[in-house]
Length: 499
Image (tube, rainbow, N blue to C red; front, side, top):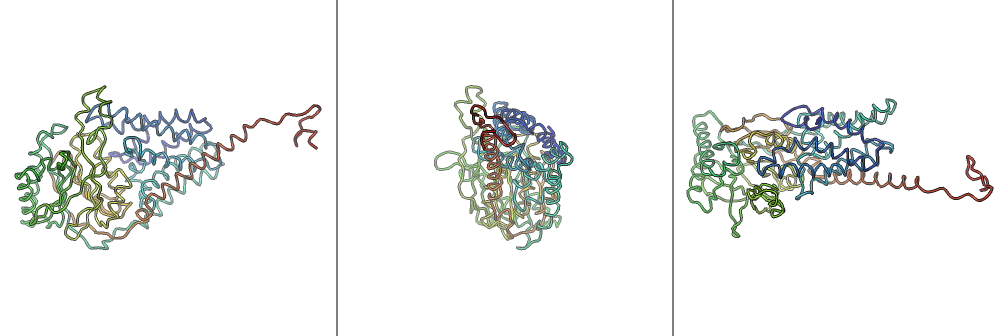
């Protein structure tokens, strides 16, 4: 619960290492089976409240099994942590195994669900600058290492290595501030994020798709009037949210006309989140680059789809329990990571759920982007904490890749995030708004972007090697003593007859 409370919308980031201190305390000296049990309980206390928003779409059939599955995976990690808990520098090996556990949850179940990464609760904390060096895995490692180090120090105040493991991660986070860049190496761009709002909260907004499109057109035209009146700067880039047009503009001329009117009014290219049907008749979650003169010129199709929403894994199986599973769609994923060139900006597009995946954001940035856009649709999840958790991820990505981030949400929270992770503007929920700001365009590549997944792989491998070493040592210690012959007596040096 302490780790859960450290996550947004709260800013209690320091609760996370305290929570891990308690976890480290109870795991010390336990057998693997007990470590698994404690880990499952820890995972449930953390993830059941954190993932409550997943139940807004198809009910508890998604929320509770998903939380249990992820908690069981945490249990596998804590079982391994119990195995290494008596090794020298046990807090270090335990923190490395947490990284390995998060890596596992990034690929399993259902293609991975990394929503509970510890780094995503740290946008306000001292650990944030570490993202520029090793991404989200390095932040998670530092948080857990601090907590486990505290547990070791409390257990034995003379255990100076544990004390060192408490101090080093915090000091490293503060020192890493020097590598977080914010300069505009490739100039600047005026960026606008449009939040048109939806007719009402919840799933029913899908039945009012035209109203959602009209809302975004209207708010864009209002911004155009503010620009004409000198109240706002002329945008170079306009970002609409995911699903701002649930009507396929390639099949609906009226929808295309409305988007064209908005682009011509604002006199800038618009990235339009739309649902587009492919030649196979199946939907794609697509962002369309809409030029005020040329119309649609480019597309980006979401590559990582949300299970139990955009897709429904094992639909026939879960239908046994509830017919609500049929509310989940059958979207098809894209494959191209390339974003858009919009005026002076080269924009990486990470649609909604994709921002949670390290490799997706990294691949998109590596195409040459100097600005990151996160078009998202959180209206389905009502007033839950989901949108704040997602904004937190966007702030981590800003520091990780040294890019400004523009979050455009249908119903909020939309935000402007600078390369140091700070939020300069944000909106309320379920209200129309437009955020306009001149942002730095950065071409420099952070160490985290260059290294990619290597820090996570190396840390995971070291943790697993510690488990293997511990098991080997225990196996050697469990070997039976050799039988002694008649007349042999045990001495300090071994059997008396051995001489």
